[in-house]
Length: 221
Image 1 (cartoon, rainbow, N blue to C red):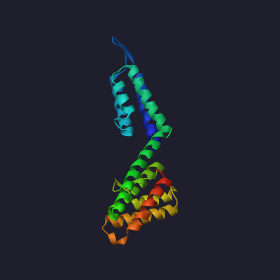
Image 2 (cartoon, one colour):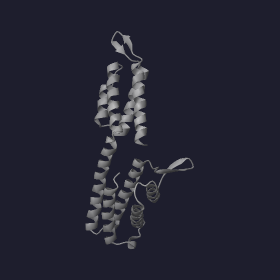
Image 3 (cartoon, one colour):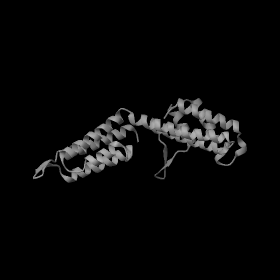
């Protein structure tokens, strides 16, 4: 899904909240809204926030604790939280945060590969570097709106890394020169994964490690 899809969903949920507010009526306990509309807003908003930010994010915990009863003030609090989340999406903050987290995770894996190389475990290092590269390609595709799946008999099948590389270059997410480098790195990863350990040496894995590091820095997700 693209950011625009999330923004559209946020707008739909905000509309549910406004619809709930429109059902307000007076009771002996004060003004309330219809429970059915309240439940639709609360459940939809919580599902959206949890899927997008994670259950421990302040947006989720705040919404869950503040939007608990069918009072207009609770609905208004929920609308404020969803509006704030929408603003983050529209401002690109979510993508920026995810990109930073991904960079840290990839750096940790590449550091692990570096350590394995220092211990002469070139084969395990090659697999880790290649897997990190493939995940980076998938994140690049998601960010650029390039499909990461293909339809096969009505089932969405994930594209292989080589296909992703081709589609990303076609979409000009990066250059043809980068595409050729990625192809070479993926080829080395495949050799390692399939036990063709004599097809490459320690020095080539070292070059792969540095090349992938520079590529991720040059073409961030």
